[in-house]
Image (cartoon, rainbow, N blue to C red; front, side, top):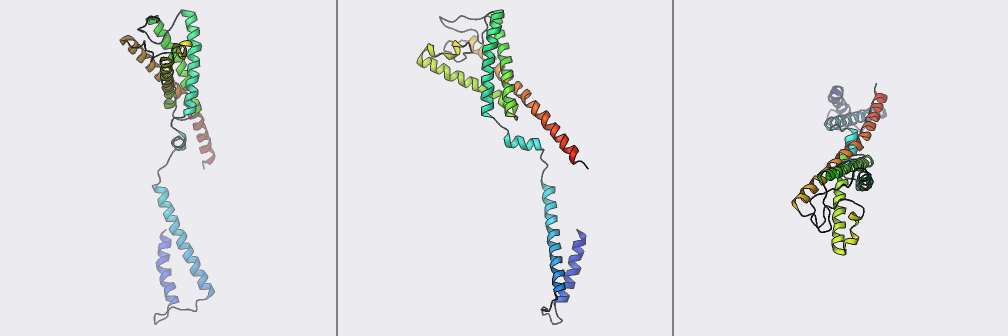
Length: 245
């Protein structure tokens, strides 16, 4: 860069002297060769200035990892992926609940329910229900994270959140239209918003079940995105090996 600076000082004096007469008037008899040299010199100066500006911009620009850039662009909550994860988890709850119930007896997801037609469950049955919830939402969270690609924990957690929203809507419809519309009861799914679940034991056991569901979904989501992280790292390593000098 110093070469251009030295050239600027010397050549500017030379060019000015050559184009100016002794009485200060500008020469109008510049030859074509001198005009070409002057244009080439000005083009070199402009190119050098552009190069200096580009160097400054590149030096000031922070390095962004490609995976982080893609995550910032495509990450966040993926609604379709988390809904698919919720449906997967609910299907697993029905399937595993039936299998475990047939093998070891009745299971449940909440104890201490208060109602004339409600049969309370034992602690062992509650533990069996918690195990079914954990495994089911671990699989559902994995499915959500695998589909979403980024932010697996967040999308896995949303599988449980969507379940709570669905349970609240269906419980509200059952309370409004009658027990025959109690869909959750008909398919043996958790009924945390039922009008019989108002005792202290029911609230505590329901909170434990909900926490189990959310934690399992988040862990499953992390596992689902791990495949993509390994694949991205392999691609980056291959790219770096190909561009290495």
